[in-house]
Amino acid sequence: MTGWGERPREPLKLTTDANSQTRGAMCTRQDARPTTPNSMLQPTGDHFHFRLRSLNFRLPNVLEKFIRQLAGANHLSDEDVRIAVDQLVDEKVPSETKADFLCHLALKGETVDEIASFAAALREKSIAPLVDDSWRNSHEILDVCGTGGDRLNTFNISTTVAIVCAAAGVPVAKHGNRAITSQAGSADVLEELGVKIDLGPQDAARSLCERNFAFFFAPNYHPAFKHIGPARKLCADRGQRTIFNFLGPLLNPARPTSQLVGVPRPELCEPLARVLRALGVRRGMVVSGKANTASLDEFSILGDNTIAEFYQERGFATSVMGLSEFPLNTATLADLTGGDRKANAAIVKELLLGKDRGAKRDAILLNAAAALFVANKAQSFMAGWDLAADVIDRGQAMRKLEELVTGDR
Image 1 (cartoon, rainbow, N blue to C red):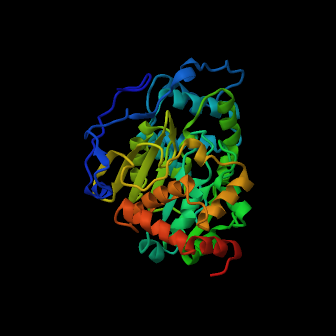
Image 2: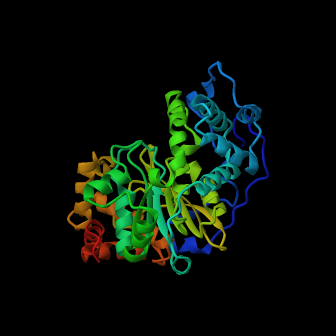
Image 3: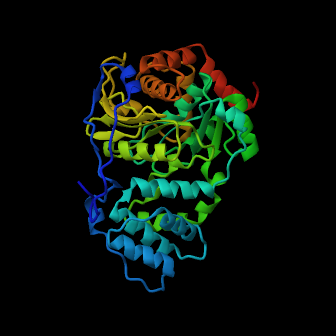
């Protein structure tokens, strides 16, 4: 099936990956066919009814050309995207023009190639931390994050998982921002915990190498984004999401070699995983978890989890993972609810201290199990679960947080 107004492309082919079998019988193999349309982000609901306001100013010729191209359901080439990105970060181009371009792109439906091209072009404009090449080549650098957008107000699961993985010996390059679709973003809760979030490139690289953790505060590493923000706000005011809703996990300036990414809709798993692979990530997994009738942008302890994954040259696979093999507490979505930055920081501390033994701990152990597996620190999900539990119960996770707060080793 193709998206609204989209010309079909050559189908994407899936191959199975033996590595995913280590998760056990709870994984159900999907058909080796594309499970999502080539246009990865489709307009739905009211988006079909979006109409551009009449323009009372003259569009720059290049964006005017691209807007006409997109209105005709024609995809952008790699070179088109690079030119468009230059226009988007140019402060002289009106925000209304940028918003019209972004809305037309979303209405057409972004392809995997377009997403990858946007991410690559924007990465080139980011400030890169100075990580030693020899150290980089000898380590798996992990990022674990969600795209946001599930609007379920869970506590900061991926941030807690990042600290647990760092305590387990995995270098974690956490890329994040303040809250946008939740009450407390990763930057908010880490700052509340006392972790310095505004490290410069050199200090962040040193922290990553010496402490197995560094936080890369997005505004500090993507200065060009300040000229895109007003256009994104205009799109939001029109009720239109944009490509930037999904670019965050793809723009980590540390260039992680392994990534666990959560998305708010199962159909986004496969295409976003393909984008990660196209960007050079060695080991990647994208997940959307079921929570009753809703979906979480992380592994869920409340229902099945849709997964797309790849491991270097060993192919690409999709699956649905059940929960029968995990020792989970009975839980509801309300058990995972968070609050503001102070409330979430308190939740994180209770978990790292090993005091909370309920549903929130289960969510951390399940997501940490996946992250440790993706980072090649554990050979199966259950081994990752046990390692994460051990790291918490031996006090290593809390000591890691204290180390990040004090700067001591």
